[in-house]
Amino acid sequence: IFFSSFRQNKDIALVNLANILHRAHFSADAAIVVHAALDYSDFFTSYYTLGNIYAMLGEYNHSVLCYDHALQAKPGFEQAVKRKHAVLCQQKLEQKLEAQHRSLQRTLNELKEYQKQHDHYLRQQDVLDKYKLIQEEQILRNIIHETQMAKEAQLGNHQICRLGNQQHSLHCHYTTSACSFQFNLFSYQKEHKTAIKQLTSRRAELNGVESSEYFCSPKIRCYPGFDKQHILWPQRSECMKSFPKIPDPEKLPTYFLPPENRGFRQVLIFKNYTVGLGETQAPDCSSITDARNNESLNILVKELDSNLDLKFKMPDDQARQVLHSRINNQTITQAKIGAFLDHAMKKPEDPLWLVLNEAGLYWRAVGNSTFAITCLQKAFNLAPHEYQDIPLVNLANLLIHYGLHLDAS
Image (cartoon, rainbow, N blue to C red; front, side, top):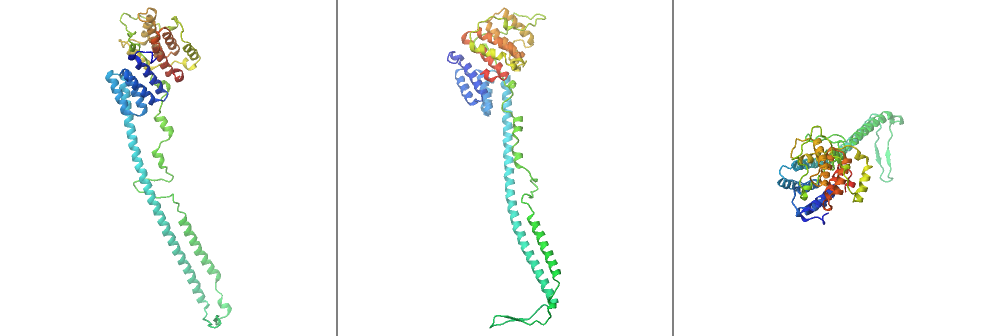
């Protein structure tokens, strides 16, 4: 399509290629393609598409600049205004989140520094407690020794001994009977056990202090088992719920390629037609005779006929907005638009494939995919070869709305 089209129309093929790459998550390549399209034409849709791509890449300043160019080319372009506002909001939100992250990171660093100082304090306290324990043990040993010596003195268990210089022997004079050396051994053992019990209890108290139980300063509240990482990083499920990267297929923006881009006049002009009372006949494209000259498209349509997802009615709000924006009279109802298209197919003033292309847009807005596919297929078959890309692009956008991205590509 790109090489077979005129220079002034080459941007259309490039923009459509960029949309396909963008939806296939090759957004960087899509941006390059749109920049190439801008070399041929600075149409507002190219800037709008480039703004969407830069928004997905996170280049918010470039995205806002592209939306501004689109609004300069087409003032009052509502979708560009809304997207620009959404991008600015997202940019401010990310800036706030980054500032909050930096603040939390500083708080975490302060907590780590405080924890380091507290660990040092615990080590010093442990050394001091061990030193006190050694002193208490020494005092208790001295008490036990003094108690034993006092009891021996009360019982007369003291002797005067001298060391023999020549024979290296100790000479003691036993002036008391053997029974006088006996003392209350049971009482001594009881007191000794009591002292040992006190030492054991004291040691258990010192060793029972767990290093994980620490105190916090009044500025920073801490709790046992408190996970500091929880306040910094939310759960992945919360991120996916609050900030989904890709919306649901039915919420993805769709596009309508208007034939006016190729120099055709607009079909939906109610200048010489008035809708009669009770005239609500919708356009029936199946009654149009055409020659099916594209085998691959025919095979695709047959496969789509068996797709159950396409049987459900799924109106396209963006297609409906485009449909009403293409009419001079904004007060006309959707049913009257269908009646006008039915009349235009029966008595066409323009090439029939243009009317069928508009009928495809009508059925996209209504949400009847079967009728829309029929209209766009017949528009393709009746359109001149150089304009067959128009109904094909619109058919691809219909399939995107139903989540059939592979078929749309």
